Structure formats: C-alpha cells, structure tokens
Picture 1: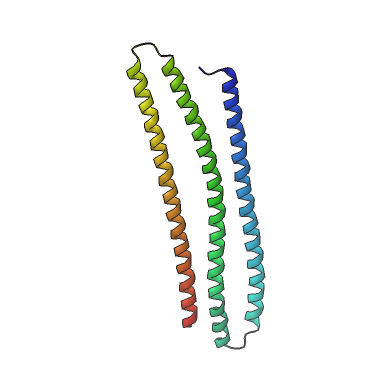
Picture 2: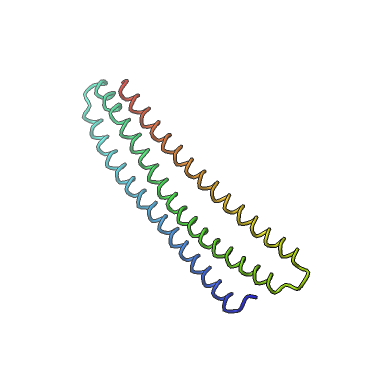
Length: 180
C-alpha cells in the first residue's frame, strides 16, 4: 500500500523533473536564439561586403566570377547552420529522453515493488491472477525497452542521413563552382 509520504515524495519528484525539463527546454531555446543572432549578424556583414564588391565590378566576367566565388561558402555556411540547428535539437531531445528513461525506470521499479507487495499479501488461491499481473508488467517493460532501442536506432540513422545529405550538398556546390 502506498503511504501519504510516498505519494508526496512521488509528486515532489515529478515536479522537480518537470522544472528540470523546462529548464533544459529554455536552454535549447537560448542556444537557438544565439545561433540565429550570430547567423543574422554574419549575413548582414556578408551582404554589405557583397554589395560593395558588386559596386566595384567593371565587367560581366568579374560579376560571374564573384557570383561563382560566393556559391561554395554559402552552401558550406548553410550546412554549418543546419548542423548547429540539428545539434541543438538533438541535444535537447537527448536530455528529455534521459529524463524520461530515468523517470520511467523509477516508476517501473516502484510498480514492480507494488505488485510484489500485493502478491505477498494476496489471499490464497489468487496465484494465477498474480502471475498474470507479473507477466503483464514484464511484457510492458520489454515493450518499452524495445521502443527505446528502436527510437535510438532511428535517431542514429537520421543523424547519419543528415550528415550524408549535408556533405552531398556541399560537395555538389563545390563541383558546380569549379565548373564555372
């Protein structure tokens, strides 16, 4: 049986977890805002430099050379921005996943303890019901672990695909710039 102290402790732990996750979410938002401010400052500076360079052009050949020279760095910067964005998002999601795993493991442990306690205090003849309950808890635990593994594999695959696409885009831009 759960006591009042156990319920209060559980609620307190849940509130602390919620505030911890809220703090992590705000850290992620702060990083995102910082990234966007840096990117905006860089874009403004580069636009100014580009405008000055365009105004100093004397013929069409210089204009084509200038445009070609801007394509590769632009693609690399876009890929770097996307990578930073992905790192912020995956880092924040990782923090959430860790907290959920810890909280879930703790809840599962407490629930298994509750089932064991109930099994010890169960009246005679209820062994079948207790066995069914333990089997259900075990099946739920196994299912949760399988889902966690699948999510991790999917995240790893998404990260690998993201890296491959970024590299392909940068390499394609390098190749296109060299052909001009």
